[in-house]
Amino acid sequence: MKAPITDRLFFAALLDPDTAGSLADLARRLRLGHELTGQPQAADRFHVTLLTTYEGQGVPDNAVTVAKALAGRVTMPPFRVVFDRALSFPGGAFVLCGGEGVAGLDLLQQKFGATQRRYEPHLTLLRDRHLVPEHPIQPVAWTVREFVLVHSLVGKTRHIHLDRWTLK
Image 1: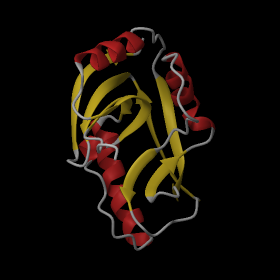
Image 2 (image 1 turned 60 degrees about the vertical axis):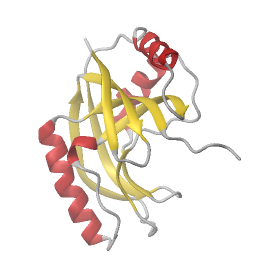
Image 3 (image 1 turned 180 degrees about the horizontal axis):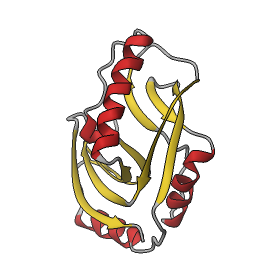
């Protein structure tokens, strides 16, 4: 039997505090409007995953070293992100997605030069068994000015930011 994953390392684009606060309000409204029971993520945990670099039990030192080397390859100016749709993924994640407004996230993800399964930029608001079909929302936008290396303590709703890189 495979041991459960307790730790994950990933790169993420974070929201500025004002946008995160507005998004927390939107998550509450969408939750009520769709009669969802899952709890929205805390505003300080909203993020867009760019690339997962490690999953396992504990984090070996070399996993952080490898991740930081990948980040060192990235050069890109800040860019605007716009999410304009909400929907549920088959696994129960209720997310925001976007069309052309997420092109910068696609490009940033590619800059790491690492292969990953199909990348679909999204921002998870909450998880729920009830699935919601895709529908438009009032656009949520912000400028991505940096990305961070996150150590997620899986199942403990805890993210530790290990390092950050400024886009310029």
